[in-house]
Image (cartoon, rainbow, N blue to C red):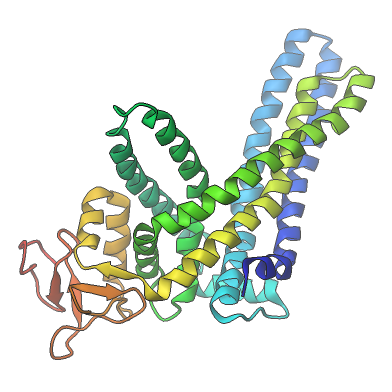
Length: 350
C-alpha cells in the first residue's frame, strides 16, 4: 500500500492526535485567564511578568502529560496500524481498537513502551553522532562544512521518526520479544540509512515551508484580536505556536512518519546484516547494548539466520551448522552455539 493511501486511510488517528493537541491549547487558555486574573488583582507589572513565566512553564508540563502519557497509546496504535497497512495492505475497519489491542499485546504497560522508545531513540542518536564525526573530518574541504551542517540539520529533524520506524518493526515481527525486534529495527536503519535519510530530506523541505507558513498565518489570525484588545503579543505568539504544534503533530508528523515507515518496512524483509555489526554497535552505544542484552535474556524465537558470506536477513531465524540454535556475543558480535558460557572468539561471558 502506498504512503498516500495509508495517510488517507488512517485519518482517525490524526484526528485523535489533533484533539489531544487542541486540549493542550484549551488548558493553556484557561490557565492564562486564571493567572492573568490574579495578576490584575495585584495590579503590578512585576507580578504580571511572574505570572507569564509560570504560565509558559505550566504549558510545558501540561503538554508533556497530555502528549506523552495520554498520547502514547494513540501514537503507538497508529504505528501498529501503519506497519500492518504497509506490510499486508490491510487496514482493519475498527483501526483504533485494533491498534490499541496490538499495543497492549506488545507493551502491557506504558512504562514498557516508554523504556523501549527511550532506548531506541538514544541508540539511534548515539550511532548518528558517530556517523556525523566522519563528516566533520572532511571540513577541511572548502564549502564542506556548510554541506555537512545542512545534512546534519535534516538528519536531526528526521531522527524523531526513525525510532518510530524501529518500534514499527516490533509490530511487524509478532513472534519475538519486543526488545529483540527493536534491536533488529535499529540494525535495519543502520544498513538502510542512506535511503531513509534521502527520503526524509525530500519530505523535510516541504514540511519546514508548510510549518512556517502555518505559524505565520495563525499568528496573524490570533494576533489581530489580541492587538485590538491590547493584550500581550507574546501570548498570541505562544498560542499560535501551540496550535501550529497540534496541527503539525496530527498531520505533518504523521505524513513524515508514514513516508519513512513505507521506505523502512519495504527494505526490512530483504535487509542483510553482517554478523559483526551487532558487536560494533554494542561498543558504540550503551543503549543499543542494553536493547541487545534484554532481547537475549527473553526466551523467544531468535531473529537472524546464518547466510552466505557471514551475513543474515533480519526476518530469518539463526541456526548453526547442523541446525542448533545460536546466539551472538554482545561484546564482539561473534556467532556462538546457544548454551555456551563464554564467547569462543573474545572470551566474554555469554
